[in-house]
Amino acid sequence: MTTEEQFRSVMQECREVFVKKLHDYGAAWRILRIPSLTDQLYIKANRIRSLEMKGESLVGEGIRPEFIAIVNYAIIGLIQLAHGIAEKPDDMTQEEAISEYDRLAEDSLQLMLRKNHDYDEAWRGMRVSSYTDIILQKIFRTKQIEELDGVTWVSEGIDANYMDMMNYAVFGLIKLTFEE
Image: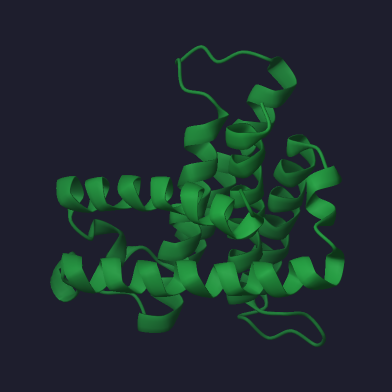
């Protein structure tokens, strides 16, 4: 499979989880502020790192579901950045949420393809644990940008960091799915 096909395959799995949770919970995430989403990303990435370092899970869920959650929370964060937070979760239909999900997943794919061209798929030579560390680093960068109320001098914004977190999580999923 090509990188694009692998990307689309793991993103389809992430989308299926998103759609199922959207059915079960509705768009309850619409009330989350950006720092809360960044904290959710932190929880997921930190758990992956903890599992990688300890080598076992006591609750029976492994690393893959956490990478899927990072992809989905990053997309939710991008939706929130684009649409603002809602007072109630009923301002976006399931169809609208899925449409936004699909648009942002495609944006992420296109960004990854452009970067892959420039970097010659260097990510394939990296360890999954490095993706985890980079995601955590981007979370801490995002927290700093949030502390600065989004005003940076030379750095990309929160949206670019969310997109990068998503792509590194996709790389982890590709490695865990196709290279084990």
